[in-house]
View 1 (tube, rainbow, N blue to C red):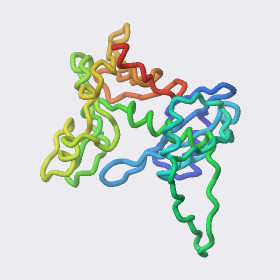
View 2 (cartoon, rainbow, N blue to C red):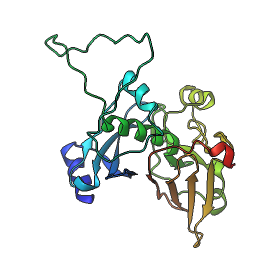
View 3 (cartoon, one colour):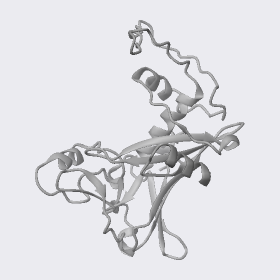
View 4 (cartoon, helix red, strand yellow):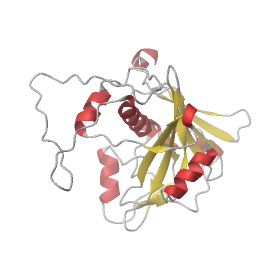
Length: 257
């Protein structure tokens, strides 16, 4: 996998790429990587994938249109097989009208791809990442032009701060009105204001935070997506998010808290 990451970085001229996680299937598993590139105002994430049987080469993950995204959403609780070519029948609501076919540069209609597990994987990774990608407060900042950039002077959280969920943020374009307004308002933006805070997530108790036995690391776990872990080396700028699971959310979380 290390070789595949380096090869993918060079072939695609990426600034950085890192291992994102592993989604297990019944016959094989998917290995996923994520690359970051600067875009305004929020960094762009590009995902790559492979299987454990073909881990020497990473492929660019599909970008789904609204139709395929809507169908993939209905399959979130369907286990993965591990075969990206597995076809899925699309069942659409009564009265659904197909959009006009896409055309190539010559005006010729482009036939749409059959919905396969590869498309389901793309949606699942996007959904998991939106819920579980985390940074410690202060790791990224909003600069004078209101672009979100990495804080090169970040020294991490103190021991006391690392034990509070309030000091961890979702690393995604802000979804709450408060964070969205902070990102665009004139003037300086405090580093904890322009991203959504984990402590505000519902239901309460869907996250857990604890210290490791050495008390040198803080670990944050998602109970909505079991297998999602975030680890921060206290007092340093080092941290990582990773996912190891079946790709399905825990829909019973309301009954467990």
